[in-house]
Length: 485
Image (cartoon, rainbow, N blue to C red; front, side, top):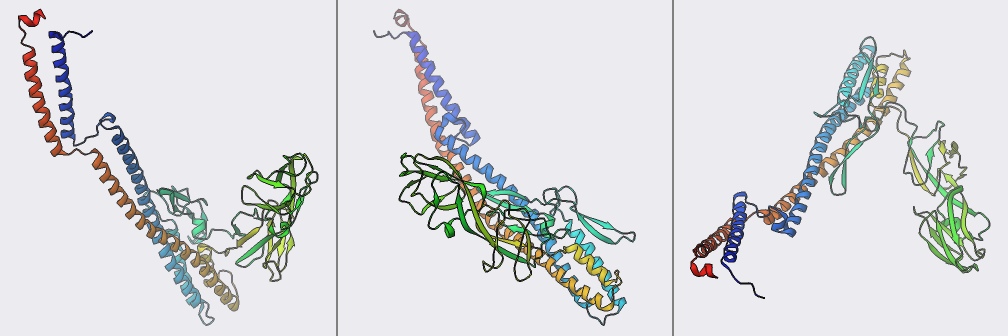
């Protein structure tokens, strides 16, 4: 049944239209005042969500920009210190060369020693360089000076102790990109104690032993596979390519093969290595390649699998180590302090207990002199503190030239790395600023109101309001007939 239109209904309807028109005028007015057309999600749900995403990205870029500025400030302080350190070492080398002449008088060498002592003091100051916020060569402990001088009764530096740590710090400066900006003084300036060496790469599991190795510079240790032995019961055997193709090493239990005969007759099934991907096999496979979760490989023969077998198979994988590319080799004993040597006099103490795969490791033994001990040693030999003979003094000073050159080489390497990083930051900052401008422009298109369009819309709403007010005024003038309705 149709509802009869009454005077009350007309009044309510007129007021409702007036409220709606006023709300729209209010919305347009707020846009005109604020200059924004997206004030709440209901204004444009999709546009509002997109604007929020743009704003979040802009905040992330701002964070990256702050990290980049902090990293640049730190790296600039660090590179400036390293550049001056390089100049100190160049001057020290020149003084060492001058002091190594056997015709030089004792007084002249003492004068050179005094200059070297001044260089040592400068080096200590540079090693404790800082930004307004932190020390740049302290690793992650940036609140205190990383290098502390120990002096004798006369105020001379006799040794320098490192009070920082060996860690470095990185910071994100772009999506998926991190920058290294805080370095350890031990790494950049050579450390304060002789280093027994370090291994580059840990894929093989090889480590240094506890004995004192004798190696000049760096050596390459080649780890090779010889034989793989599978525990009995499963029927699995080494494949045709096992001897030269298997990449696993280790005593029983280091690696595990899981094999299952799904046919029940030994004709087919599945196998996997160390929990890696599952591979199907049949009793016709004589050289099946099985890969583990970390890229380790074995070749197996499944022609004689025990029917119904399902379980793990312990593996023993033997191998050899060599310092001369395989010309001579020693069997891996899988012990904590195994000796490896070659015909050139290199002797290594290696921990092979955790060796797990073939490969090569470069082992480096840095010079035992760092910047400070090199300068202290040169100063003391020039000043004849050890009371050496004339010839011994000249030889000792000559040896210090090599120590200074080694320290200088490390400084130049660090300087080159950090200078390259700074150059990369400039390019990255330009890209970041461009991305920021692009996002701001897109955000402006979404959020900023068009004033000319607003004027037109407000004029239209004003005309509508005038009509609504006129119509409402007519409705609010009832007569007897209206009441009779």
